[in-house]
Image (cartoon, rainbow, N blue to C red; front, side):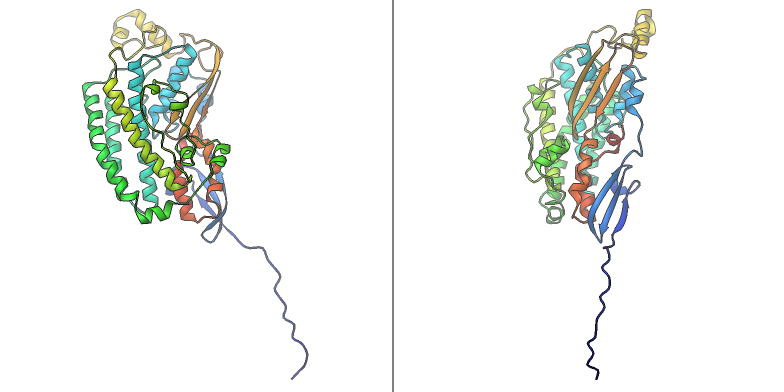
Length: 402
């Protein structure tokens, strides 16, 4: 045998190999047309980069070429899951520019519709969180209630999804007896179904294991990113524009602000669930205390005249044309107004130079703000957790690409 020492040659160190995964833009789990480029180590997410702009519609630029009344259809298509809140946020912004204060009846009517819209938005988010964790049954139960709300919209405005709800200075028409009947029917049926939904998921061991400590974010990080709405409150920050800066007489209503502790997927689910119960309380109070009066403001040059007068009186026809085409005149000014959208602070930064169209209009879309935090929230987790985190954030593509 040879006494020579055998030398084992070690292979050269090489960089670790990662996989790149395109999550979107057409993947069904993205719930919208946007893309996440994930850097994967097996099932573990090492890094992520978002790509938006697939449905960019130039809303802000379009608004600079449209009369104030014709901006409304653009707002419908921001968060299309709760379009009436977008509509009323815009009307309130214009009314602030004009120095108008609506009556309590108009305020309460708006509150009823906005809280119904908040419920439909949360129905979509929470039922989809259930689906993405493998539970389809709750989705099918809960979506029947969403249909009831859309029937209310249809009775009031003639539309279901993009509602073009209301007018600057009030509503196009009063709530009919059928509308009140449909609202009361929803208030009667929805609590039972929501309780069933909670029983299916809230204390379900599989659902809890899939959502607790998944996609967590600390309160200071959430604030640094500009979080608002349920995602911020789930992180433990008690902030709601309906309370901090009331509009539409929200100060008249008694309701609680649900707040979480961990800022994870489970807390976001629970906060939205609790908010639906609070919205029901607000709607009931508004229905019980809605005052008598007109559903519109008598403001010539601002509120569209009744159609029967437009068809029969020259003056009404002239005002209708001038208002719709932006010839009535709006004062110059610069202001910001925000409402508590279903996903957070929905703001409108408006500059008027006194012309027929906004000189500048910027939409503060809550989804666009908090979607920046998505890579940080999913790093170190597995791919299935990234899907659930995105669902619980309720990222709406329409708010990403204004």
